[in-house]
Length: 584
Image 1 (cartoon, helix red, strand yellow):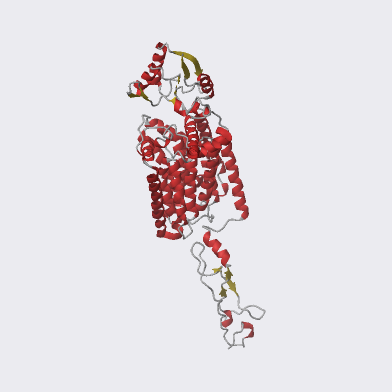
Image 2: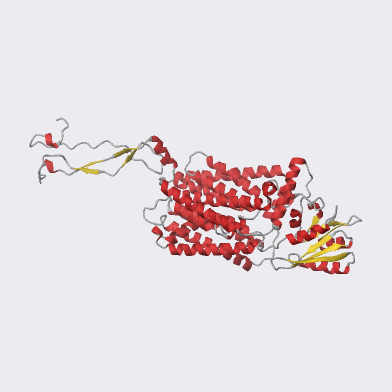
């Protein structure tokens, strides 16, 4: 019997069911497709027959026939789906999220640029060193100091970049480099959080990180912290962006991470997190093979750093030892460091903890939420522990050393990696369809208030240096020597004065003074002998950082007829008074 439908079959003859339409293997969106077709939900087809009510018995009353619909996907579109970690968002969703991100970056820039103060001693030191390093490289000018032996970052990386900006636009341009680096860091944080999760979590992560104390403070601070943090963000973004790619393009993160460590040696503390992220980001797509990525990336970074250190020489090794790996312990109580932790990072860290727990329990904020492949529960737990735990690295290191030096900057490095989980925490607080948006606004307002107030307080912590520089400039002389408690500030502002070279300045932190008989003295004995010999033309101190030494010098200078008190300058922050003594 030829293939005919039920309407053409002779009466009393059974109807042969129509053969189902041949189908191909279904396309799996998150694995390598094996065909160009996708199975769509089946549809029910009633057997055709003469008009009228259907019979209630006989062959014609057989069950309805299910037919499978087949959607043919063009090969180009199939490749796009394969490369994407999740189905691509609509153009409207993409443009809205980008517009919100621009608003976040604008607020971050405004919060950083609103702070005003003269150059800080670290800024002055690095920018001055950059100018001398640049002159040494271009014209062979001798360096006044061996900066590589005591800097906590390579003097030929950020200091030269900052010096170039300073040459073009002064201190404001050098600080603008840091602002651009921090804005780039926030944008990269949004992008990698979006690929790890989705757009909503990416925006929540960016809006929390952008108002932290470290983000605001470093955005207007001309040191190598902001560029180093930006390089770490670039390396983390690379390993997340290439998580779906089979080729080893993730190794492009190795030179970027090595450059971040070269820019600031303390950045090495956060490289293991990037190495772990290489496997965690790729695990939902490649399974256990993703572990190869972490191993290869770790070996590549270690090899690059070892090679760079071998080429750099012993001075760099001495600087790494003294400033990072074997840093001298301080005397700051742990209670003070814990208080700083609470003020600078408690809220973002608490959000990260909430996000880690919530993500481990359930990957989605609402049913059917569009989100990147979350993997199993074990993978989600490890991801949350690694990212959130990174925020504890800097505080634990500072507590181990009992020092708060640079703590306000280092804490931001860990908060960068904890920010994606903080984004989940904020999204869960807001709830599905912005059900509890008022609570989210309240939490963000708390982060904003703490970050803004703490950054402003830290930015006003050092005194305006211009009155001291103006007073000191009245007593400059060829080949004269000047002892200033914070010598980097006048050295920076008077850099182009031939009578105020960096080699002519000494600070109250360290001295190595050689007497006329050839004996070299250090510490208090060195300062006392230099004053007796009339070595310094100008001596300026303010009884703050090195108060014990300042008191010794004050007693000596009052009894020494060859020096006179030229001026007393009250610090603008209300802490201490500068006493300027000049040799008669």
